[in-house]
Amino acid sequence: MTSKSKLSLEPYKGTRDFYPRDQFIQNYIFSVWKKVVEKYGYLEYGASILEESELYRAKSGDEIVKEQTYTFTDRGGREVTIRPEMTPTVARMVAQKRRHLNFPLRWYSIPNLFRYERPQRGRLREHWQLNVDMFGVEGVEADAEVISTAYDIMKAFGAKDEHFEIRVNNRRLMNYILAEHLSLTEEQSHKASKLVDKMHKMEAVPFSKAMQEILAEKSEMFLKVLRVKDVGSLDPSILNSAGGQELKLIMEKLKAMGIKNALYDPAVVRGFDYYTGMVFEVYDLNPKNNRSLFGGGRYDDLVGIFGVEKITGTGWAMGDVTIRDFLETYNLLPEYYPPVGLYICHLNNHLEDANQLASDLRSQGLNVAVDLTDRKVSAQVKTADKENIPYVLVVGEEEVKTGKYKVKSLKNSTEHTLDKNEIIAQVK
RNA sequence: GUGCCCGUAGCUCAAUGGUAGAGCACCGCUCUGUGGCAGCGGCUACGAGGGUCCGAUUCCCUUCGGGCACCCCA
Image (cartoon, rainbow, N blue to C red; front, side, top):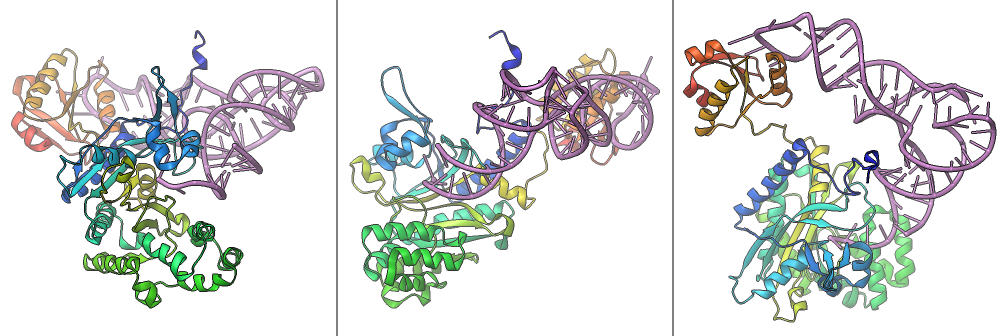
């Protein structure tokens, strides 16, 4: 305890410190998220980071809770898990108050989530994630709307259609293809799905070969289905299945909404079992960084795990780490600026005057910081410059006498002599 | 959880089995009423522990940290 040098300066493994410039970016990302989803009428909710471990076991199984979450026993003997995702929590909240909530529900949240695993690019132990969900609408209109919110957020960040792609599929359709069209066993379906998930990462030949090993004589038939790029070109029996019709409708709606970079992709599977209908993933199209950014889908049976009547849901989630990487890649992050509009420097014996002026300006709604050091003026101004503060002025004998201040813009080096009211107009 | 690669100053890098240097950044001065430019000066490092060796930043092991791939994907 006495050894000061032993204390680490690093943040805990897989977590980040947010210095003001990092927090600025974080706030920017959050503000874009909020602005867009609130435009669609989504309401913000929140919850504790702690949940009973049982909640995740019911959904994901013992293995995942044990090996990939922060789980501990509290002093009352309860098993507790720090939330690794928000969906079980929101499903719980919806189930609990289902009689008092006004469906359809449009809800969003920006929780921080924790998972215990080895950190790597795009995947840390703590991250923040926008969760957008709609409950109580069974039709594909809800699916199309949630995809549309995802699209609008990408556009609000300044992404162009050619930067990303929305790949859409449907679980019901996939199940039809596997179980009805190909009449596969459970095991074959499972293995084939896992393989399909890797389709875009593999070369065509090894992929076909691997599929052959799983499906034998049926593999060619499946590979043919996987090659279909346009919903309309699907085998009529597939297209006419319930899942096929859903997919067709969603694609039409997205097109009607003016979303041009959405397309059918039979390779979109998504890891979790709880998806029951539409699934989608947003892909980064940068050749150097070709990967899934985020995604979501329809989960009509999830609320039912609480033993209540069926409440349908559809939604998606996007993490701050991956979107930040994406925005950096495309140079879409905003330039840093502090909330301070004016930095007041002062000469000897005029600190009181500087504080008085600051106080007056603050009461008029300006964000003003006073340099409280007795350093020379050049050092004070330099501080303002390094902090990206747009305006600076110096309080001295002359200013106090005349009530006029030389306000300098540090951006373009112009200087104007202004009184208080003029300062307010200028800096605001 | 598995495999491979990496760890020198705040950052990006260099040299070396005989304890290390640059650029940028930072602090100060030139410049006691105004930042950016320039000059001068200053600060800061071999991730940690152990082994081999007369001697280790360099070689070996462990550990911690980082990167990539796999696993998993919430």
